[in-house]
Length: 355
Image (tube, rainbow, N blue to C red; front, side):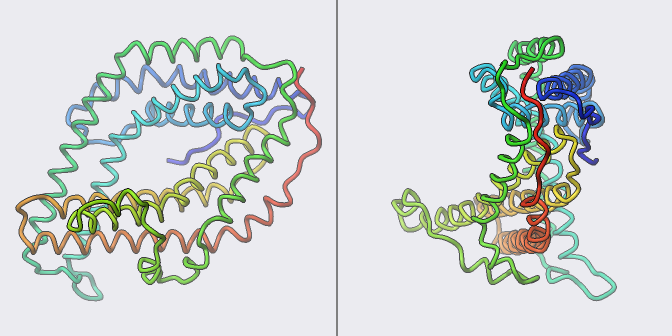
């Protein structure tokens, strides 16, 4: 489902305060309309076997956009109120994203394993007929089903909490009156700040390593391992070093994904097109999901008392997902240079100051 903007562009004569107020009022209204449906969807999903539908998706879209506006246009709001609101919105976002995240990870890993162990028109997969494939599939399915069930229980508990009611009250007040500062500045320079942060984040990426379609060689050129991992016993340190190196290598890409979202939402507030950023968001979303899936496969391979054949199959699945990570980085590297030229040239006529 496309994470499309939910507000229409405001008239050019509107003040910066009016534009922000209209945007946040619309998003807070969407939040309040979607919340009862989302709570009902979660409550009707025992076992967590389906992805959330319209209610939860609409709620997540509203949460992301309100949080993005409060971050990018922070100068327009009272600092303590904006920070507390963002913290509560992050809590709800993380809460609602867990269960569908496990389900997508399960679908990705099981599909990858089925492809590797099956036969296609161009030949059998490298794990076709391998004795460990069925056991590896059963192990992944069992572990991820358990994780989804636990996440589902946590969501059910927290959606009945006073914390959620307080956040809903906060959104109700936001619909009635947006707490804007009288001298909140102009929108365009604050939106440009989000684009500058994205450009700086992209400059920090190792795009030279992602410059070839097959990026497997990049897996052998990771950064240094953080010091705490090196302080462990040798047997444990080998596992932690690999995990820490991959996590450190993925971290800047995950940060850029967040910066892409913030830039998208800032352009939406300013009624500017963000089609190129939509594409980057999708690419980095695949990067995030493949990275998370690889971690899950590696963790499953360390399950006590599994057979060497099962562990081998999970290792192959892990490597397959890391190659998906490299493929997403290559796609980003192909899209970013052309898009960045447009972002560098982005400008807007001076927007009115806060009324």
